[in-house]
Every structure is written in structure tokens, then in C-alpha cells.
Image 1 (cartoon, helix red, strand yellow):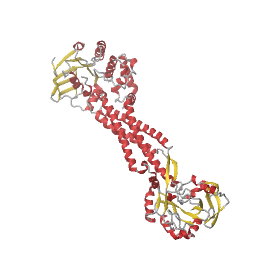
Image 2 (cartoon, chains in turn green, yellow):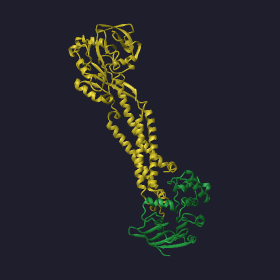
Image 3 (spheres, chains in turn orange, green):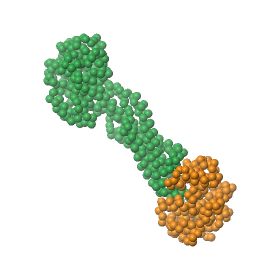
Image 4 (cartoon, helix red, strand yellow):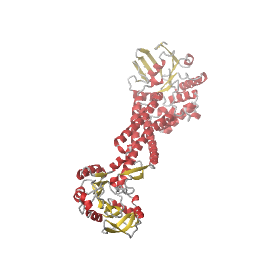
Length: 222
Length: 416
């Protein structure tokens, strides 16, 4: 691993019973790099993202995030690791329906010993950056798809992550809202220097990234 | 644990919250009401004896003389000797004994039911001193009589009149309203115990069926330690013979015949069933709730919540729900208990305890002590119900939270 590498997966495989979904994949992402993982549905993109982010354990192989081997970490160690190092953006937003916008953004901070004011300040700051300052007290049900995804992006950033994992972040949005979200992602990458690994099946969208990794049938093909 | 998240979850998921809370609160309310009712019946069963200042009454049934003239004992109460009395006094649990003599006196022109009482003994019929409506109560060392007010009205007896009972004359010093007092050992005339003993001892009819000494009696009222009443009743039977009539709160409870009063086992079984059903409802609702939230829990874990964070959040949520259910159950029970406290209960007084010759007017009528059912919820029961709610919340919440916290976020967040 060179000095610029923030995330690496070495010889990663994932099997569900007899079905091998990810096959001996070796991948690395540099700090501040924007990488897109493309391929057809079912080719193993999301599984690879889950492996690299510590949401799932590989059957074989080794994962290092910021120099730390997370392959053999316990569930709770992985949770703490995710809390401190990574952010997630999902296709279906995955906001908590009973929490309003700022509370959803502050969700990763709830288990951390921190004053309520500090939590509120950090969440508010991010929501204002996402131009959602006027929607802070609204429940997800009262937000549009684009607004929900902007809340989700703010939540992913609230712990100042080193790597942002985005799984089809525009998949549930119309094209213009999707473009706006991609604009935010690009801006984030440029301004904050956060490394981004984005899964998408839309090649056009992937072109906004610095590097494109193609997957086919569980393997990296290019 | 985030309190705001918890409150939002309970508030915005109203259907789930209300179902769980109502299910459990009904069970808790049933538990409280069943136990309060049982206690109320037990308390009611104590009233007839308490009203006569006793916990136990003792009588011995016997024979009635063939010729009903002069002073005789009713068949339900014949001699209890002074020797037997001396054996009863030191028994463990006995706190005081009141003695009395109940006589039927058949004079040529009139029949009397006469009760000889100890004027100064707080245990037993001297409690009648609070029911004197006119004149005064019997004084120590004086040979005088109190007349029951209805009887006095019937025979036009007034204070200052003299009445002759079995050839002995007594001045009437007071009228007493026995209907306001106990229903046990009700009489037409009340005399000092010594005078009644003299009447009994000098009656050849009475002596012919039940030998009676100058210090003997035929009614005992015993004040006893509450927890020793049952054991004492059994000892008294051994001492006075199996035929002895021992009146206790339990014997009145049996007369009441209510399911709630009859059996502690029934009450316990009903309480357990009520709680079991309530726990099932609460468990099922909470299990459904937590299963519905699998995706949400996946999100929590993905953004860095540890298993312990998740379990604590869900556990406290369950405990708060169950605590609210406990409070609601208590409120429901308090309302029902208030409504039930207007219910009247008729406690039958056995003929033996207040014997009236059958051939006299009203002699065969069943006597009842009627009172409002004293339903109330003791603090200890309320506290137990709340603690039980918290325990149910802790156990069900802990169990469910532990299971759901084991889910892998990748399994529930996969969108395809």
C-alpha cells in the first residue's frame, strides 16, 4: 500500500453458500479520490462496497482502511470504525422516519458523548450547506426525494469521514434531481477532499468520477 | 440512549405504541382489580365480627329443654364453662376475650331475647355503648337494663320503666339501636353479665339440659392476632369439641360465596392468566414493531451504533412503554375500583350467631349485614403492578432487542 492509499481490498471473495458473488478482487482507492464502480445489476458491485466499508465480511481476502486491517474486527469494532471513518449514502435514503431532518443528520453522533448543542450545531451547519436550513424540523415524509438524499448526504458527512460510500445515490431520483445530487458529490470531493467510492450502473454518471472500475460477474474487468 | 429519538418513536408510531400499551395496561388493570376485589371481600367478611369488637366468636350447640318456660339457652349456644374459658385465655394469639350470655326467656306474657354483657370490656357487645339513642349505657355494679329501640317501641317501654324478666325486675336506663350496631348476638334486652348469669344459673329448665355454673357463659368474643386466627380457630375446636361453632372472617367469606372470596388459588390463577395474556399481547406487538424496524436498525448499525447502543435504545423504549402501560393500568383499575365501591354486598349472618325462636315473628328470617364493598387499591399492590410492568418491559424489550441487534446491516440495507 502506497502512502496515498486510504482504502484497499486484497484478493477479496464473498460466497453465499455455493454462489461466489465477488471473486478474488483486488482494489485500492487513494485519499481524496473519486472512484466509480460500474457494472450490470447483480454483478457484485454492492457486495464489494459492503465488504470495503465493513458492513460485510469477506469469505477470503484482506481489507485495510487508512492502514488498519478491519478484516478480523468484531461487529462492535467495525461499528466504531464506521462511526469514525466512513459515511454512507444509499439509493433509498434510509432516513429514520420518526426523526426530523437535523436529527437524522445527527444520528451517527447520538451514541457519542457530546452536548446536544454541539450535535445540533454540526447538523445545522451541514444542512445549511445542503440548502436545507429551512427544512431542519421536517420529518422525512414531508421532504422530496432530492431533499431526502441531501439530508442523507449531510448525515454521511457529519462524522467527517475519510471515505464516503455511495450506493446508487441517484437511483431513486429523477434525472434533474440526480444531476443536482451528483453536483453536490463532486463539490464535496473537490472542496473537502473526501475519497468517494460510488456504485452505479449508469456509465454517464460514472464519467463525473476520476476513475472508473468495471465489474462483471463478480470480477473487476477494467 | 437518545431520549428524543425514543419519545419520537413512541409518538409517531402511535398505532404500535397504543396497541402495546393498551394490551398490557388491561392485563395490569385486571391484576389489580382481581386482587383489590379479593381484598375487599376479605375486608367485608371481617365487618360483622369487627362490629362486635372481635375476630372470633365461640359457641357450642346443644339441646333445648322440652318445656320452653323461663330462661333457656338457644340450641346454638349452650354452656362454655369457666374451666374451659381459663384454658382459652392463655392460648397463643389471644389478645382479649369478651364474655356474654344469650338467653331466651319465656315469661307467661312475653318472650325475651336477653344478652348479658360485660359493660367495660372493649371486646364484645359493650361496643353497643356507641348505639345508645336515649338514656345511658349500663353502669358497672348496677342491676339495670337496656332495651332495643324497636322492641321498646313495640311494647311501649320507656326509660324509667321497670321490666321483669324471669321474676327479676330491672329498671330501663337506656334505649339502644341494635340495627346501627352488630348483627351478631342481637337481643331485645341487654343486662349486666352477672345478672344474666344469675338468671341462667337459677333456671331449672336450662340446668336440665346444660349444667351451668355461676361463672359460666355461652358466648365468647375473642380478639386475636390476625395471622393466628386460622390456627386459633382450629385449637378452639380441639378444646371445645368438633361441634363447637367458631365464627371467623373465613367462615363469613365462605358464606359470601363469591368466586373472588372463595379461593386464593382462583385469584392467583386469574391474575397469572391476565398477566400472561397481557405479556403475550405486549410481546407480540413489540416483536412486530421491532421486526418492522429491521431496516432502521440496519441504518443505525451502518452509521456506527454498536450492538449495545441498539439494545439500550430498544430496551429503554420497551421499559418506557410498559411503564406507561403500568400507570394506565393503575388508572383504569382505580376508576373500576371506584365504580365497584358503590356495589353493595349482603353478608348472611348465620341463625346460630343471632338466634331467635322460630315461632316468634321474624324468627326464621335470614339476617344480612349489608355494606358497600370496601374496594380500594393498596399502595403495595399499586407499587407491585408498576414494578411488574417495568419487569415485563425489561424482559421482553431485552430479549427482542438482543435478537434484532444481531442482524447484519448489509442484509437489510441491500436495495436490490
